Length: 270
Image (cartoon, rainbow, N blue to C red):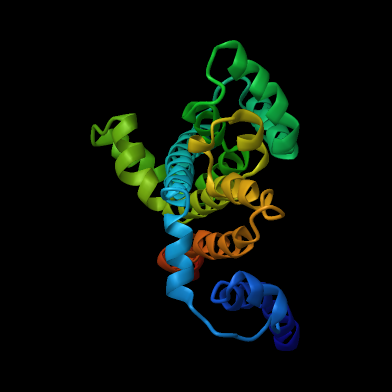
């Protein structure tokens, strides 16, 4: 098992290592030197060139990606928590039908919805705006499914009844008790949604025509499309890709302790 995990780790880390090495090279060094070792490295100069090229357009793309992923991830997590908790702890007619619709949403790929969403947003005049990417990103059927399963198992009915007897409102119970108990599941939903939005390419491609609204994925693709006329953009694309993975790495390191808490919550019997 250890050997298999080591092979898997090498498989996933080798592209990252190549990216770290390549972002230190010049445009000619990318093609004229060994790909897995350094050759006249200038990482600071290369990254500065990426950030200042075309009046700092990469910084704008980076800010757009942060906006899309952070706002979309937070709102999608809160909506998924509320919907999952409601489906798990409240009985009402049609509850299972609603949950089945949510499960159907999990099975539909995002690329299949991009064109219908564009037609809808274009009809109301909201295409080529921040909202055309933000609003679809605020919905996570998988998040609703995960939150319902977690709320069913982790939120005790007796605790909710005790809070109601003490006079707590349903909103207060959800905000003060349920969200804290469900924090491991919410961190998972947020990370999945953040990464999905950060790496999303097809939806912004369909929705956006103004380069000032591009996220990093679409911006780097536009740079790569001009490399035949401006070879220096090869190096800028590699440097931009390196910078784009840093937030995801930091987010994983910062939030992983919440996963550990969730894994150990059931190890001690009350």
